[in-house]
Amino acid sequence: TRVAAVRGITSMCKTLSSSANTGEQRGALMDLLYGSIIPCLLETIDDYTIDNRGDIGSWVRHESMEAIEVSLFALDSLLREGGSGAPSTSGKDNVETNVVGALIKQSLEKIDRIRHAAYFHTRRILGLTNLEKNIECWTQLREIYRPGSEETDNPNLFDHLLAILRLEQYRNCAIQGLALSAGGLGDSVSQTAVSSLVRSVEEGGEGMLMAVAWDLHAILVKKTGTSRVVVPVMRTID
View 1 (cartoon, rainbow, N blue to C red):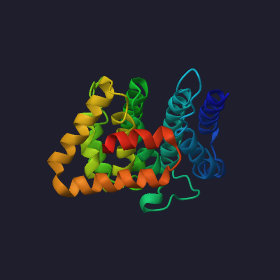
View 2 (view 1 turned 135 degrees about the vertical axis):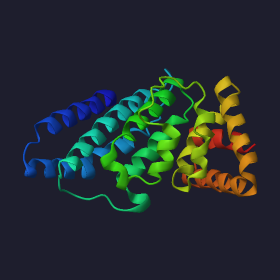
View 3 (view 1 turned 90 degrees about the horizontal axis):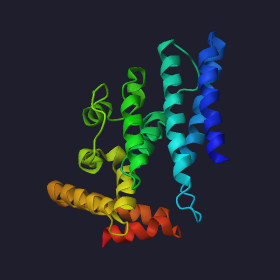
View 4 (view 1 turned 135 degrees about the horizontal axis):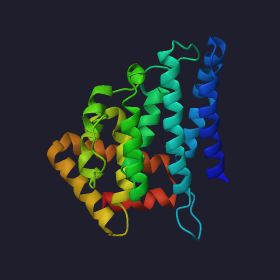
């Protein structure tokens, strides 16, 4: 049901975007994107519901990433056409920056199909030049994700995305994804994530070590009582 609801949002965005022909319609759509649609998708992309079938929330996260890309493509089109509406705020409260942070977290997630989907969704979003002013560290992110590249696969995203840990605005999001992957039960994904995190800390020195430690502490404080997060983070710290 939740997957179908997110697909409905995707379809709605496509329909409204293609039919917004007047300035008033474009302004109303921009208000809807900033005020309701994208904030809603920032909630659904964090769905980690688990039942006897496993991480069923992963299907919601997967659909949410598709919906987010469609929404930002619509937003890019509105900005290109000079649409007016509720402007996003500056700094860390930027809607677009928060979206990129959420995708970065998923780019370092433990499930392969989610990790790779998030990586390529982020690459395509970073090709939307009208969003540049609203996404922090735009240039650095484009250097990491290389939008426009013909590359179709990147088997070790943990190593490839380590540079994000040097971007303060996104480091906490990256650490959240890394911690959930590194704190697994000793499978190949967790071993790769641990190796990448350790290498990043070693290369970054004491400053990086302290930054990572404080980010892990912040996650534990924020997610107190949430075992699916706390347990992997404690394993990562260990």
